[in-house]
Length: 401
Image (cartoon, rainbow, N blue to C red; front, side, top):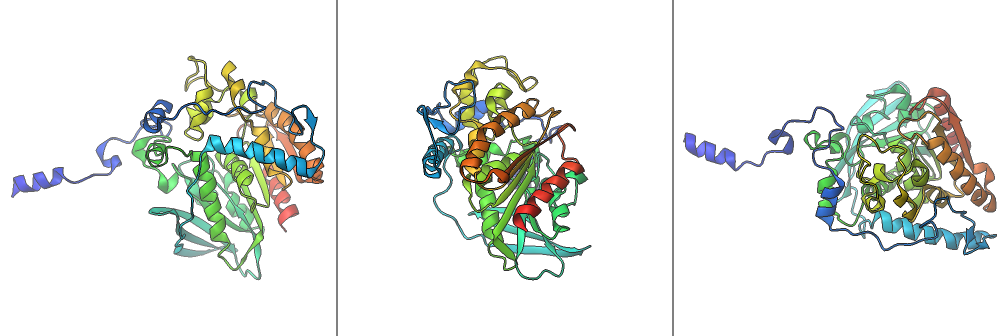
């Protein structure tokens, strides 16, 4: 009997966390590496060239082949070209959407609002959980704001006001302003994270399943499914949906707005740096698992995890798209970019944002939406201080009320 029990135990498949110790820090990398992605996916450098390829400067969005674009129709043609290039970098999503099958797991009355924990299936067999905050005594249809979280294993709990930095409890702040708000765990975070796999270790099983996709693409997909869910709620106005995020949540907001026209207004705080001004694309392909195809545009063998921020790499100029083009895809919808001039995560963010705005603002003017884009600069590290978040929330009030 004893031997039989031992033999049976050896056949039990134990979860990863039970097979090895949890790393000392969530930022230790046990599974993820760009090299492992290459081995899994067998991807090669994309055969993409664009007008941005080979140029160190951010190209003019309203000039193509030495011709100025002077009409909204001409910009739309250019926009489609940019979107096609970006789509090649982030990869293709699933061909069809599955039923969400949303389930309410609990409801707790709070001061002035109801907190509902829910779950849904963005893809078959993939259960994701989130928090929906609903103002008390709600009448009619209200505007809603999606609040993707920053890089934290607290995940959805931080925006919802259950953990983390009070400055970043965006969903909680906005429900008190009368918005329906929603937060959820991004892939690799919160309840979608295996703590034994290390930071972005959960990307490995993702890329085994989807070798031609990317985590950024997946995050865009998941946020789109969140909007699908909001559209099933009779107290949400589908014509007044916004998105706001800091850092990881900021870049999620920008990519989601570029691909999903249903997001009517957005705020990105400390959310991006242009590749060329940052100096390289290492952070997007090696330091994170977000855009691994950009790893083919890393040339220097000396860039590493300890030193990659603001490090020049000549191969970066071959990258076929830039962040100002991503911003251009959002026009003419309202966009607020708040940027710290003392950001240790994006040390060249102030320069990047100013240069990007100089390229994107003419597009907004062409589309008669000059008042719908705004940049705000502050000095407070990689943070979202109250004076900045208040301006961001006022921006939402301006366009979604």
